[in-house]
Image (cartoon, rainbow, N blue to C red; front, side):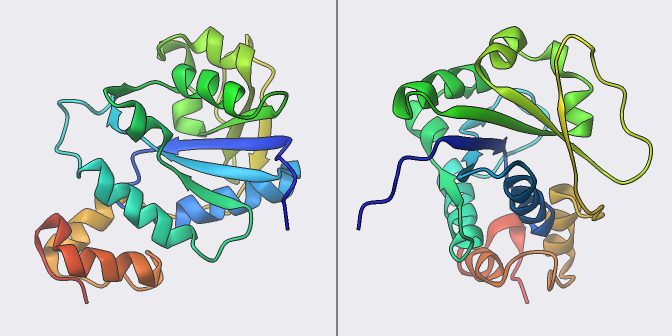
Length: 200
C-alpha cells in the first residue's frame, strides 16, 4: 500500500551523540502539537558549531543509534541527508534539499530554546526562516527571549535534565543509562564500545 507524501514535516537536526529520551520526547511532542506527518531527526555529518570543541563520534555510529532509537516510533524517522551530502552540516542546505525532495511540503525547523536564542549567529539564518516555520521547544517556566525578526512557533515539552555530555560521562564512569537512553541504543553502545567503556 502506498503512503501519501508527507505535507507537514518537522526537521529536527542534531549531533545525537548519543540520542536520548529528551530527543525522543521532543520529537514526539512536536509532531503531536503541530499535527506533523513526519519528523526527521537529521544527523549532522560535521556539526559546524561543535567543530574543534570536542571529539564527535563518527556519523555512521550516530545515525545507527538514531535509527535504533526511533525504530518503533510512528512518524519519526532518522535522516542521513547531511551525512550523504558530506562536509560541514548547514540547516539552510538541508532545507533546500528537503524542499526538492518533498515539493510543496511545509517544513518546520525544530530547535531548542538555547539554540533559538542564538539563531542570528547561524550561517544563513534568514534563509532558514524563509524556507521553514521556526519551532522553538520551550521548557516549562520562563520562556527564553528570542529575536522578534522571526515569527516563532512555540511548543512546550516536559523538562528532562538529560544531556548527551552527561551521558557520555556516565558511560566512561560505568554508571547506568537505564531510562535515559533507549534499550537498543544502549545495546549499540555496548556492541561498539563507544565512549570508552562497556555499557550495562
